[in-house]
Image (cartoon, rainbow, N blue to C red; front, side, top):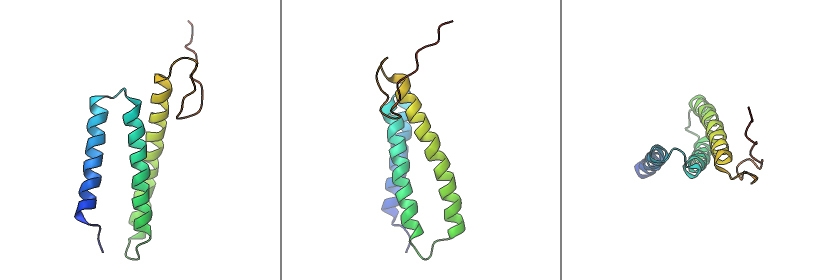
Length: 105
């Protein structure tokens, strides 16, 4: 039983919306965090596909590996963006770390 067309369209629309948001406001940590949350939702779809007996396991494993790499990059970008926009002395909510003091030359 294949995924329904509305689910595939909804995932595509969600990705387009996030892409437009990132293009419109690349400095916004909110869009980067939303991208990471988007990746987590995609992971749940990979898990659902793994439960299907008709799933091509090799293809799913390759897709999961690519998705894991993208998730790591998005998480890193969201954390870096959040720490760059944090006020001095405040803890970064994405990583729990305090931003580094600027270097004096």
